[in-house]
Amino acid sequence: MTTILQQIRQELLANASPERVEKIKVIIPSSLPAFGVINPVINDMAKRYKSFGISLVVALWETGFYEEQLLSAKILVRIAKKNAPESIQLLERFSGQLSDWSVCDTLVTGLTKALAKSHTDYFFDLSAQLIDSPNFWERRVSLVLLQHFCKQKNFHPEIARRVMLLKTDKTHYVKKAVDWIIRDLKKHGYSL
Image 1 (cartoon, rainbow, N blue to C red):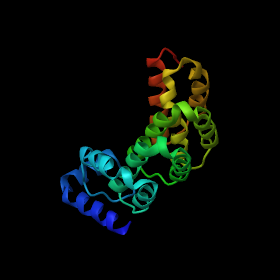
Image 2: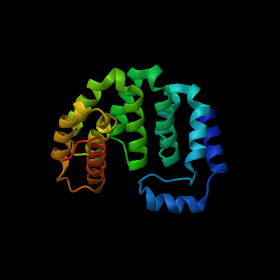
Image 3: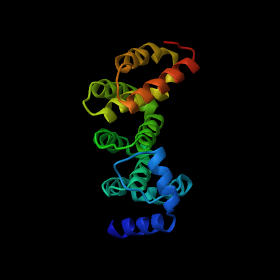
Image 4: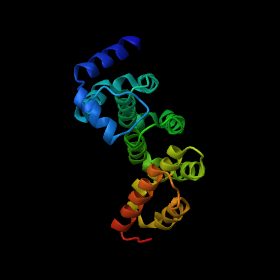
């Protein structure tokens, strides 16, 4: 795995841009350092490296760099259907380790979309577990888990109830998630 990680790091560095680092600092404030690699490069890498599976996902997540965590999330989303139990375990683990909205939303929306048909109850149960978390990223996750289900009218009342539980949350990224879900509910015919 070390050789693959080194190869990925070299590829990221070859595509790095100091100007992009400054943009990332503004658009995606994070506690993680960034290389300055654009998303299309990371998307292409996710396609090429997905065959290394769950072990690469975990190794990339643990490196502590923004683009490597984003790549980890994108690979996990690509392999989730074939690795549902492991993907769910990693979602739970990573939810408490998030440090920016981009990785959060990529991970959570991607996994819910990939596994929605087979794991609907699980996503609603996890949302209920995380909604009262002292960790604001987990509170954000509790709503983002439900975003995919805004398209289905039968879920609207339950999603709205959970939005209302967090509507007064003072944390910027939780407020952004509340606004996002309210917009999605409204787009699909449900107004709060």
